[in-house]
Image (cartoon, rainbow, N blue to C red; front, side):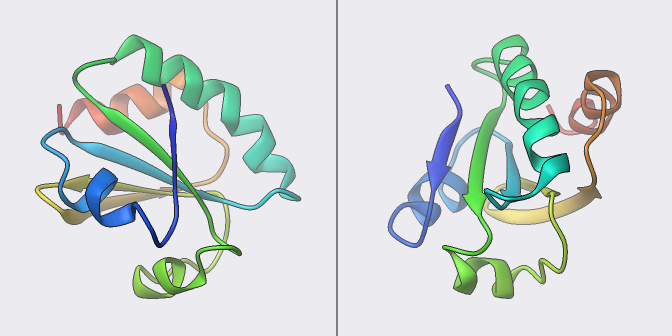
Length: 105
């Protein structure tokens, strides 16, 4: 299940996660973000128990977006051990996302 995070649960869901976390920074009006959503659902289902997928609305959680330097959406940040370790942007196919997360799980 994809988790939606904001200022109230970002720390517990992302920074304190025992699993690697792929965070999708998106907005509700972003076309590429909407195209990416079903791909992320497929990725989450495929890697359930090995990877956590978290969505953050970049406009509603502006402090988080600013802290991680989010300048465009969709932006994907990979976290391990509470630290951002890699970044990817754009609406990407499943194979590209699997290649990206495969380095960390």
